[in-house]
Amino acid sequence: MSLSLKQQRTKNEIVNAMIGLLNNQPLDQISISDICKAALIHHSTFYNYFHDKYHLLGSVSNTVCAPIIDSVNQGNSFMTAVVQALSSNKRVLRNITDNNKSNSIYFDLINLMAGQLELAIQKENIFSPEDIVNKIRNSNNPTYNCYAFAGMIVGVFIRWNRDSESTSAEEFGKYFNQDLSTFIN
Image (tube, rainbow, N blue to C red; front, side, top):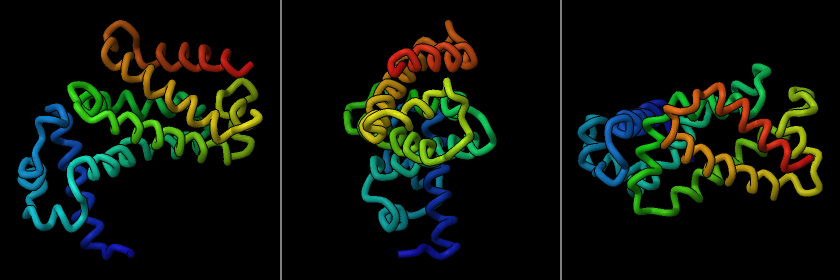
């Protein structure tokens, strides 16, 4: 079912309201009422688009990670694009992952990141030979490797996000890309 322009705008307003809330508080402290107030909508409108706040979280994650493939298309390495997207949404992602009782969010983030990797491996001639995406593309089982590396990326990002004062985004991206590439040499 395709959404009308008005419906797309309303859905985007709900997603943006949730992102705004996640900039200031953990996911577990955000209620549907908070989201509706921030988006200036009624509860029934929320439920026309999402089952609950965890369903909404999928759209939030897609919005946060959407710039990754755009950055790759501009010639950046996948890891540079990931670090840029994740570091520019650090507070949102911290409030999604920390102090959260739902382990399914980690699975959702891994699925999302694996999907971004799968999109990236479909792009030809963008990556240099030492890039992690090119190595996954040329591996025996690219799909499984996308999920394996997505799990590592999400796990390492969560840890870096907690300790980010000690390592800049640029250093994190550079060293993480180098370290990841040693796993598939």
